[in-house]
Image (cartoon, rainbow, N blue to C red):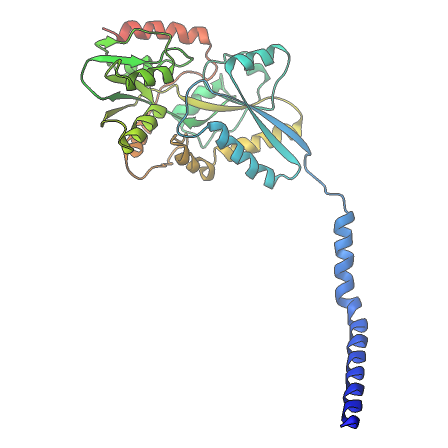
Length: 338
């Protein structure tokens, strides 16, 4: 028995020695190259196309859908940053007044997201963009002369929302859009309007809920609010009359002139935003695409709304001034209110 143990120990020692010898022979051809490659990866300096921050100012001159449009831009920025290591896009949401103050102090971003009402004071600082995939009836409103200086990337629309037949219509006229223009364009008239020009779009919706008037001339945001309350049983069924032919509820993207590499990256970000792959996500925001031949909704009220808005639309130039909009509101009021 003792002899067997001695033999077994000898075999074990010989076996282990053989394994160690084999490892020493094979390691240079397997393990060492992997270690060298890992060391090179650690010591190598990463080469970036661009390393820095691109600033995007986001101005909302009208209400959106169910989720912030800034959230949409931020999520796409994350996707863009993964493709362009070293590049970071910072989205800063600001009011129209804050935007104007920043311009006055000499500040400007790399990119601008905006609705109508900012005026044409920035157009001289913008570069031309490609908007070939955008609907022809929409992209013309982002042009100055023959130059495409703003690209439409989100579309909204108007609707008459009625819950009783009292004949009174409310509308939010305090802002840089002109809701009455959609009625004027369709030769529709209002028998009696709720007289309060200090109402913005949310104030008008709030008074509609409180029963100050039976019909609201609202936007896609109001459709979402009212329909959501109906689904929860918090509001009696309302009738939706989706209005086509005109919409000034368009969000645009522009790029400021700057360094060549920054302009190039900004253009790529704009192209990403107006790609079909990105635009299809607007369904999650209860907004509408600006692309030709792209439908977001399969059924329901948003499908009905989309079908109306997919027909040819008139709008205002992206760089129309606030004074021009106010003048148009006065004219629309005369033509619409009996």
